[in-house]
Image (cartoon, rainbow, N blue to C red):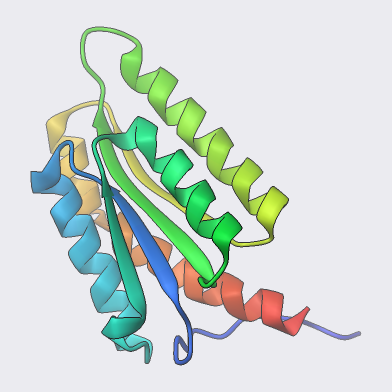
Length: 153
């Protein structure tokens, strides 16, 4: 049986990071985690492109443009949506997650969903670099692996 698996070597990769400016005290930490993971896995920081958008709802459009134009091996989408008194957060989280999958399937470029969906601020902080790790770093590692898997296919 032939097995295809991706390694975690980021050399010679170009990856775009699309990040929401909303909740920047959280999303800045996600970006730091993503950049750190890329460099730790052999990537050159100059091979990263950072695109800032107003909020999480705007991330899919920027991610789609990046994937469609080419020149990147993957897109890492980062944001932080904290549930409030209305169902707005659930709407944003569901919409963005579905959009990332569609973009990936349409373009063949992996779009990794690093939008933190939290019920409260404490959960969001935990997922942006404390108790639960850093979702930005986790998404970057998944992006590196997916790029290598696709190269292997």
